[in-house]
Amino acid sequence: MGKFIKAGRVVVVLSGRYTGKKAIVVKVFDDGSKARPFGHCLVAGVDRAPLKVTRRMSKKKIAKRTRVKPFVKYVNYNHIMPTRYQVPAEVAAASMCTDQQMDTADGRIEAKKFVKSLLQEKFSAPPADKTGKPSKDVLYLRKKLRF
Image (cartoon, rainbow, N blue to C red):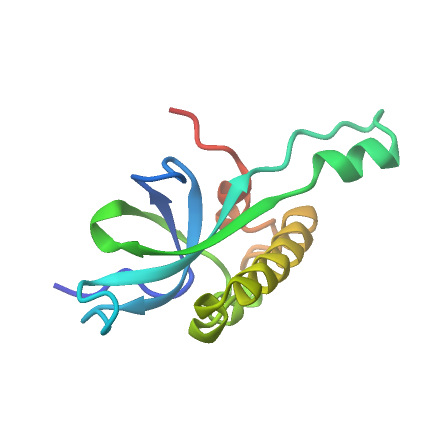
């Protein structure tokens, strides 16, 4: 069977603090590592999705409602569900955060800040797909999962 969980795949976290939250796979560890001897991946996700914005709202209110709260963590393959969506190359999933950043608390904070700025930028102006319409993958990631 082929490997379908690769960098850029949108997944849903199934257990833990971020249950039901959508995330992007940043890096995969199919054979595990010394610290985690099982198949897992590094994900960067959306803890709190942006809210709906209308034309009547002020710039201040729009800025507040379009904020994103991100998270970065290592997740076992058993605790994620891959979706059919794969973020476009412009999002640059592999460069969101690194293993070195995940080693320290300051590095994780720095990674979250970078992910937050990247996601807010892409959510406000989604990259276009081949037909010129906004990418469905980014639009899916922006919406809160209803269950």
